[in-house]
Length: 216
Image 1 (cartoon, rainbow, N blue to C red):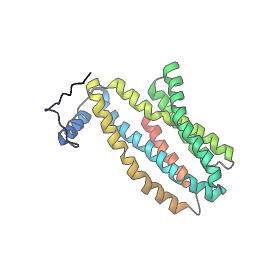
Image 2 (cartoon, helix red, strand yellow):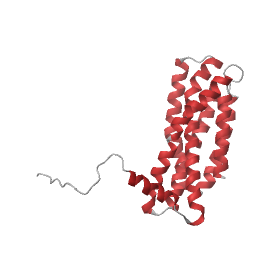
Image 3 (cartoon, rainbow, N blue to C red):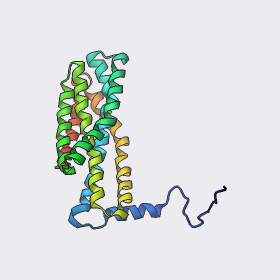
Image 4 (tube, helix red, strand yellow):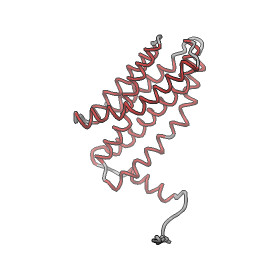
């Protein structure tokens, strides 16, 4: 049986359309009830900070462990595999238990996990033994559900016709973190590598504190 192919001659096939960008921006910035417009902007900042911390810390973790504790690739590879595994599983489990089963509000969970994330950074900075790094990373990735919580809360507050546009805006702003994390963490690590090597982890804690404030 042959399938019929129908060509939509009125569809816009261009890769970039400035009209769609303008429409997205109008949707983001239009006046909304209950300071929702401000919440959207703050959510974009929060997601960007989370991405900066996640990527920036991961970029220098191996060099830090190698310099301070003489870790080799044989030591770091299982650690990396473990952190990748819990990064994929812990947020899902945490979100299911806290939000779906216990029916806790997203913002309360977000505030709590942001505080846990700050604790994880301090614990990681003062860790010495290998098991401590594993334990702190387990705690840290359990706090990664904040990104899902932000989107979940917004999807419940926004009209369905605006959700896709708002989420597209969040992705655009969030990806600026990819451009920012490298110069920020490089400057911190290079400046403090000899006298205060774990400073970049405390820098993550500072950024995590801003995330905590935004949730609060």
